[in-house]
Amino acid sequence: MSNVKPQTLGTVMNNIYFKSRKTPNELVLRAGQKQYNEINVIVSNADKNKKLPHSNPFLVQAFIKQVVNRHDNIDNMKFTRQGKILFTTKDPLCAVQLLSLTQFMETDISTDVIWENICSRFLIFDIPVNTPLEELAKEIQEKNDMDVIEMRRFVKQNSVKDMSPVLITVLGTTIPDEIKIWFINQKIQNFIDRPRQCTKCYSFAHASRICDRTNVCFLCGEEHVGPCQGPEKCINCKGPHNAKSTSCPAYIKEGKILEFKCRNHITTSEARRVYHLQNMKYSEVVKSPPASAELQNTVTLKFEALLQSVNEKFESLIQSVNEKFEKQTAIFAEMLHKTIESIMQNMYKIIAQSLETTISPTRKKKLPKNLDLSTSLPMQWDAGGKNVQDI
Image 1 (cartoon, rainbow, N blue to C red):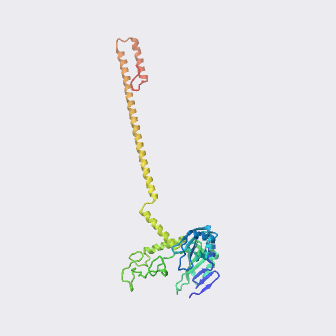
Image 2: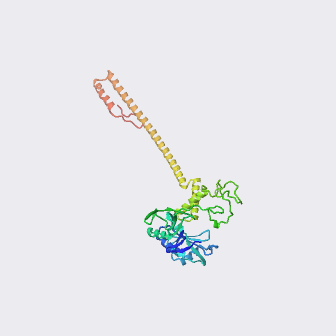
Image 3: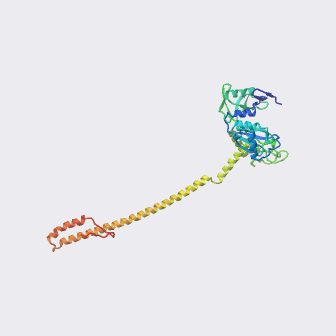
């Protein structure tokens, strides 16, 4: 059995596991000085085998207003499928008041915080195995202004290595790229869980201790006794490989879910729900064009119709102008032709008169002057284009 030794900062078990001695209420209050998105308090029946009664939300609200004086800072409340109540707030004092409840509408309860929402986990490497974890926690807290909640040393049994990585959980959802310990700037790495499978049914959705299914073979996915004789078939994706294969699509998807969980500081169930919701929305987008695309298509079609209408009207206007221009050109050509013809006729008359022998010398002297007048005076036309000047 492991020896549990109380320490100044926390509890250490065999120099492998360390846990802060601060109460959840103290840690939540200290989390108010760090960066986080929200605090989720889970309320469950003190009897783990029973669920909380699903009461009227108005009665629940009235009860909360009586026992929590900072109830205005509660952002959300919902009943979970596990028969619990989840309260969401950004106020650490409100969260502490909820954590301090021992009864909920005459039902004995237990409370806890979803630590993933207000904590971060990271790995540091090459820590001597003989270094006490309490000493390491003290060094990290004093040199880096961090509140260490838990520490776990990764070391295999009967290992002869004198160095090992340590997993550290601290308050706050942001961590630096490196921390200072023992005068050294130590690089750190975000910790992302690896997919874990039930050892009975090889599902990724639950742990073995709560599995109520029958044992199956991880090679063929069937129930049988003795060595497996069938071909490999994954029970999760039905592919031609065993259920433990790291190339299985189900394993890869679970890895993405856990990475999403760690990077967004949410629970595994919430990460799985959001991941499936995003994939569902993506598949809907692939199957049918989004509303914005439909709107863009509609606008494009209407714009093309409007442009075609404008072009048709413009062409009609150009054609009308051309027709009028041709008509006016024809009228001008006809007027010019009649003018020239009239001038020629007058000139012919004058020349003919100058050749007549019966005309007096005085009239012959006036003929050149009349010729000049007939070529220099402007012609006048009536609306029909006829000459009204009598030369």
